[in-house]
Length: 214
Image (cartoon, rainbow, N blue to C red; front, top):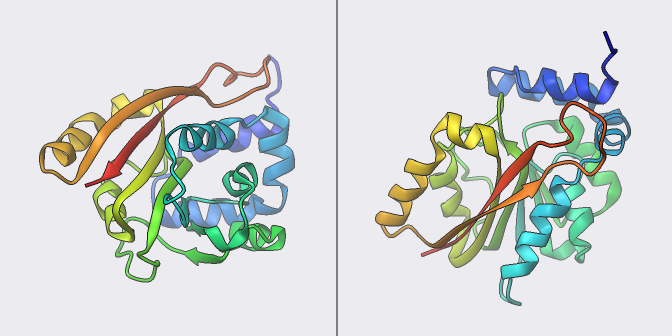
């Protein structure tokens, strides 16, 4: 039996989390070695893929950006924008500390996205997320609430692990949001999550859900 790498173990254990409290404690514990043992070791391409989907649709008006589930700041790093244009939101205080050290964000918010989002700024021109909507993390329930943090016509690029998209019932929620006139121009683009071959998750993909707030 081939021993799994530390990165694979971190990933697979994260998929088994059951509550916001579990997520906060889990990511606090390995925040300091997340980049090296997980992102670098497994070739975590997902943040760059979400940023590419954003750039494909973005206009100059689609800032500032809310980076949902920002973790250690990998989406902001891929954006390479002035820090005044990006805020980070995450449930883990220790992950946010690592992100702050990188000086990539205007503001950082420690927030449980299953609860009220009143403490987050509400002037965003875009909302991005890579890695937060997946097994053991968030289902489709917070999507409606995330509309409240952005202005009309804001661009959303929300990554959802493909297998989880089907399992957790994202499609009916999105279609209802569209039919209710809350969002428009809904599209999905399949993107790779990893760039390095040879591990159990090399072929995993996600759907970049791209839409605008109506």
